[in-house]
Image (spheres, rainbow, N blue to C red):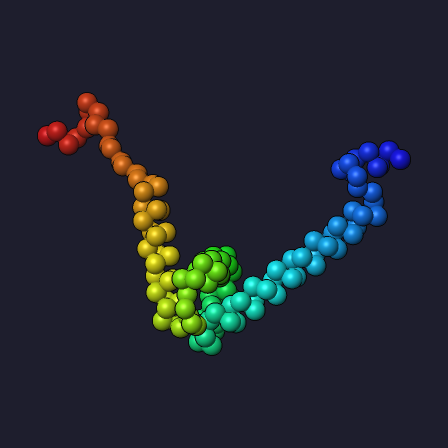
Length: 121
């Protein structure tokens, strides 16, 4: 009975295992819904490009998919997204990231001059 006190209230070892199964089923369903939506929204060339991006950078691919899904759900996308539209979206993302990263870091080097430096002669 001591092991049960470590579980959250109302959870027994049996429904803890069921919770894991439910979580896995939910993730699979979300993944399937995402794939279906991408197949509906993107044309063939755009899907191929996105899959190539996913091979190189899965995180960037996920970001692009999330943006496209939000745009589709809010009605900003009419029809299917072509490869050129996807490229334009990628360029916009790149511009936004470069602007934000340029502000983050600035390094200034100042050389200190000592009294006995040879530059003075």
